[in-house]
Image (cartoon, rainbow, N blue to C red; front, side, top):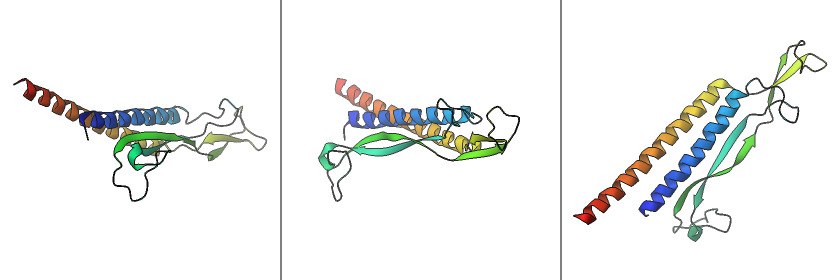
Length: 148
């Protein structure tokens, strides 16, 4: 594995974790949103991450072949952003979005879970920065040795 490979892997992690933080921030911001663009309540979103491998050890889709030892990691990729279908009904007949029974549909977002997910994403981002800085430092030391 080369220095550029480790930097590319760390970079892919930084991108993925930044997207996770953005999606989690959106969930927190919309915890009380009863009407989305399509008129339905906001749906909690979650980033789905998957490992990516080099083409030597994978098929055309990037999926690792079973029993392959030649696959080299290429980092992490965002497989998609999933939306939950769950909503939370609250009885509030005076709310403008209340249905005929007086229930209002809110997104089923647990703030404790969102904050825990945010902390996990932040820690993973920080770990990737540390790994990137270590690879950069090793590359710089190698260049310094070459000059001596």
